[in-house]
Image (cartoon, rainbow, N blue to C red):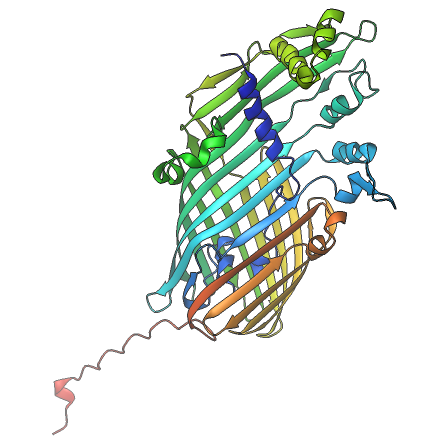
Length: 478
């Protein structure tokens, strides 16, 4: 089926999502990892057994997370003069895009979470339901050069340039069951989380080539495409919420995932930990629609418009852009294929942590973090100081390096007021305050109910009863 106007809107919708500032992020969760009295740290390492006998998150408010990271800041592309006039700094914008063309996003909302210690505190069992959104988009700088400067720009004229963006976007629900416990005389903890994944919306670019070449003598544009984008749930996006509840919650896109973790305490001062998260996939078979090049690799020529065609277009300026776009799309020919199932993998996250405790109040931490996504690896490093009043207060100050930024100062605060806990965490606090000058920021907050807060060390293993001594009847003295 040939790509029509409505289909174009679907593709543009996918690209538009990736371009909205404030929605784009690569979430590393650096500061949360060592926030010791916040139960949600178990989502960063399932081996972290909470210090509470039981906790439950306030539904919809126990874990709210939003952040972004884009190649440029507001001040890089927008300039205001004394008369409040706005100037778009195109060269600065494209310069930033040429050095980093990737837009990344990760958001999270806890619908329900609770956990409890069992078997005299030796094991921990947890359950959670979370809505998650992850995205990785690449916008090539030559696409911006073509739109702004045209095909005669020095960056494009007489050169082959790939202008095809790529999108990897997934919205899904995660239903998880976690189980963890102690080992090696309680020096070691281990844990895992098994997850059922219910996919909502997906866009996955598997082939992204759209080569453009402008002939220096004829100005003809030669195009060659090898493009494939797989989607699910966007074929009727404007009526997405009109579905019945069962179709919204369980649309039929099923998947599984697993988190694994471990920690080891060498002594009272030194401990190490590690985790690997989101090893999993989703099979998409509900409302799938794929876009593919009709003739992959075939070279097409756009020789421009005749004077009559151009005059006809100018006769109605309201439809000029539409007619011009249709002329190019008629030449490119991208087909729509419906009902073909496919599989997408989650971005895998890694953590390796270490801590040094001066006493029960002061602790220094180191965290190496990474995300593997779309054949790329994104590393991060965090050094932090943590102060706590056990059972009452936790304060975190961290220095974080990620997303090619080296000035990220993070902070975290958790307060326990009786059974109620409130926490607030950010990996880049200046990004929240001076938002026009940064290209990344994050915030996470929540409210938990803690029951039977424990203090001190975990309960010792029960001491077995000593056997009653056997008495030799012959040794009894009368």
